[in-house]
Structure formats: C-alpha cells, structure tokens
Image 1: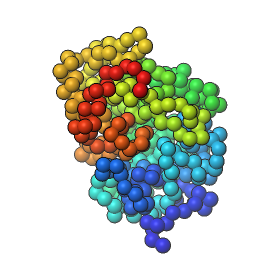
Image 2: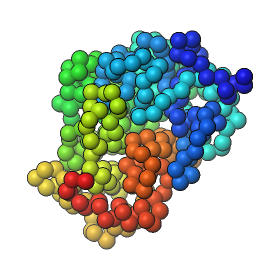
Image 3: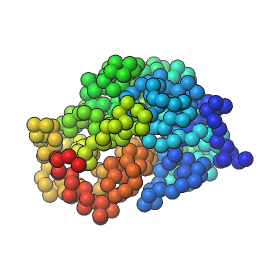
Image 4: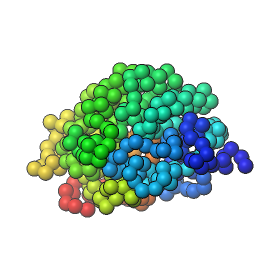
Length: 356
C-alpha cells in the first residue's frame, strides 16, 4: 500500500499523526478519486484535526456537534465526508500534487489537546512543505500564548468562525441556546489578539448568511470586521443532515448575492454602511453607487466568487469548491469566474427581494 492509499480509521490514529481532509482536498491531492463541476480547482489543502472523542462544541448547524447522532469518525462536516489520512500521506501528496494547491489550512475543534497538536502539525507542514499555512482556530480553548506559538510555528494567517451576525444569534446557536461552550466576547477578543500577533488583514472572520439576521445586520458586522483590520469570508447556511437545523432552508439566493456584493464594496471600494440604504426589513435597496457603476462591478463576477485566505501571489487559495451548495449554475460561492450565462442569472436576481 502506498502512502497515497494509506487511509486509516479514527479508531487507530489521531492527530497530530493523522488528519481528516475535505473530500475536495482528497480529490485534488490524488488521495481519492473524483472530479469537479466545470473543472473547478480546490486550491487549498483543508485539514481537520481528529480525535475519537470529537468536539466539545454543540453548534446547532455543525455536523461535528457533540450531540449529533453517530460516532465522530462517521460525522460529515459541511455536508461531505472528511476521510482520514496519515500526515505522511498528506505531506507527500502536497509536495507531489498539482501546482495549483497554494495553501494548507488546519481546522481546529474544541478539544483540550487541539492547541498543542495543531501547533505540532503546523511545525511539520512548515518544515516539510513549501505552501503557506492558515489555521482556523477554536478561540474557546486558546490563550494568547497559543496564538503566539502558532505564529512562531509557521502559520501566517488565522481564521475565526464567528459565523453569526449578532451576539443574540451567536448565543442561541453556539452558546447557552444549545448548551455550548462558546462566547461572543471571547471570540472577538481572540480576533483582537490575533490581529496584534498576525497583523492587519491576516485574520479572516467567517460569517454565515441565513441564520435569522437581516442583510443590514450582516453589512454592519462586515464593516466592523474590516474596520478593525480583519477580512470577511462569507458562507451560506447549508443544512447538515442530522444537525439541529437539518430542516432549515438556505437563505434566498438574491439575499446572498446582495451580501456578497456589499462585502466587495466595503473591502474594495471603501463604501460605508451609511452610504447604503435598507428597507424596513433590512434588505439592501441601494449600494451607495450609481446603478451603472454597480452593474459594471456585478459584471466582473469577482464579488460572487469564494473569498478566503490568499496565496503568496495575492490570489484566493481557500476557494472551497461547492462547500455550501450543490454544483450547478446557481452558486452561493463560485469557485471560478462566473461565465456569461451565470452572470446573466446574477443580474436578473440580485435585486429581487421576494423569497426564492
């Protein structure tokens, strides 16, 4: 059996010697068979720490929630399986894989061993591969010294999955509302600490649209993130089977398009939330620029592509193909530049404030 074929069970191996990879990563690195819709390329090797006892978190929308039925090794995450491989196999695949894989990201879980093992995995990746390293951190279990150790071990960026747009929604779906350990203030303090240690624009804040917030509330938190020196990485809610929210629908596609466009305008065009206008239900009805300018930006297609950590050339590496929707022309995050047909679809729906 070659290293590329060396998949191990969670009952045998755990992190830091092994890690789970996203299905897209396994395909890109040649660890699993498969292909992507429209030739999309997964440009980041996404790893997930693995322990047989799993995660202490109980987030209502997460496939790894501790109260979700099933053993940890059988739980999906972001709707897909995350097969387990040895770090030897993963590192060999990164070094011998396609040149378009331009970053590695280690996703932590809420487990007392995770900080130590994530640092060890980062050190090894830094020593044995040439791609930059991000860590999607779990603030609940981290101290400032852990962040410093992650930076010293070789990570150049971190992500913080705040996910919810308001403290009330955060507490409902991640904290007391689900008997979970996470705290809004702790997460934002970790963002602040991360900015001091990793530097401006090297902290990414994950935000998930479709959890009961208004578009106006999402614009407000994106503006807050950008103003303190972080960047926004947008996700759409996408129900995980067996989770507490398995029957919840995705947000209306036009809502997500408007939030994506607003993020682009805040970060790339210095548009303020006060420049925009919202209706009584919080929908964006004016983006703060003339209509011709807005249509020109829409036609770029860039606002609707996946946002994530950059590679060394300043291009998005963490593009998560089909990470929060099924393949098809209507994407919640396009992992490639939208073609003419897809742009026409966006133009025809982005200003629709009726339900899908």
